[in-house]
Structure formats: C-alpha cells, structure tokens
Length: 114
Length: 114
Image (cartoon, rainbow over all chains, first blue to last red):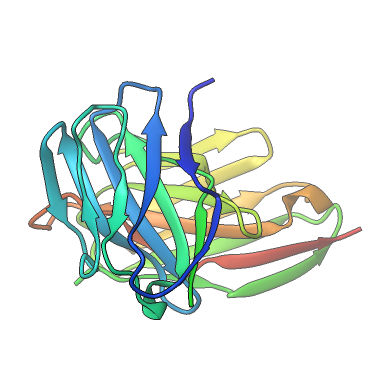
C-alpha cells in the first residue's frame, strides 16, 4: 500500500531533550516536506526537500533541522525542544517538485513539550 | 501574498442533505487546488486535485469546482452521511513563490447529524 508513515505517533518530552520524528514514504517520491498544525494558525510548512541531499526552509524553520540522506526518509530533528514546539506534525510527499502533483500526508505526530 | 479562506468555519447538517463548502484565494496565479479531509487528531486524506486548467473534478459523491478568475473553489457533497463528518481543508500551490509551497485554508468543520 502506498503510504507515508511517521513515528512516533504521540510523544511527550521535556524542554531541551533532543528528539527525532521519522518520516518514510514507499512511493519513490522525490519531494517531501514537514508541516506543523496549530489551532487558529492552520498548517504551516517547516522544511521541504526536493530530492536527496536537497533541503530548504519553509515558513517556520526555527528550532528544527532535517536531513535527506535517502529518497524514502525525511526525519525532523528538534535539537532542543521548547514548549512552543508543542504541536501536531505532518510529513508529506509528492512525486516530484512540480506543484502539479498531488500531495500525500502521513498520519501525524502529536508532540507535547513540557 | 496569497491567502486562503474557507467559509463557513463550521457547518452542521442533517443526514441526506446536499451541501457546499467554499474556499477563496486572493491570487489567481496557481498551479492547482487540492481538497483534503482531516479526521480528529489524524492525518490529511486527499479528496480531489484540480489543476489550474481544469474547471472541476468528481469522485463519487464529491464534486469540486474551480473558478480561477474569481479566486474560488467549491466542494459539493451529495447525500451527506454521518461518516462525512470531518474537517475539510483546501490548499493552493501558488505560481509566484521563491520556493515550492502549498498554502492551506483554515478548514471547515462539518458535522452530519444522523
């Protein structure tokens, strides 16, 4: 089944403790991205990647890092999480960088930073 | 700057009713518009993707239209069912950006009452 998977689905952590949220897609998509969703602010893009080893900042990149060493994986790294990073995070992918293609989303990761 | 709005923010209808959800965007220069469904605490499921050159797309009981010149899209749901209860999001891919980007509307929360 074609899908985007994320792990973990739920995470409660404390301020300053480094964490990684994994994202993987099995559709051989070139383009992947990370979003966060907050009440009243909607979905905002954090980082995106047009292909392996090619990443760039979205609207709200501060406090986040990403890497794209393999085509299928695009982990989101929070080096020193803070409470304002408590949010619902989504990974997405599409076939290539072209905006003509449909986006597919993962199930989401609900992160709470105490 | 491209902005996407959705009206109404929330809608409650009795089962069996036909309904229309609205999406407006401020800049008609877009690649495409995509409608998503989001169930509480879960990921986004793509419903319909309309390319800029198309007027409408249909999938089962769903029909989405696009009028680029007026900056509007509608999602028509026929014979609504309780299982249609969810938040519906529209998103546009603008042409005029320095990087690849998708802009989401705030969503319409739909409740279908049995």
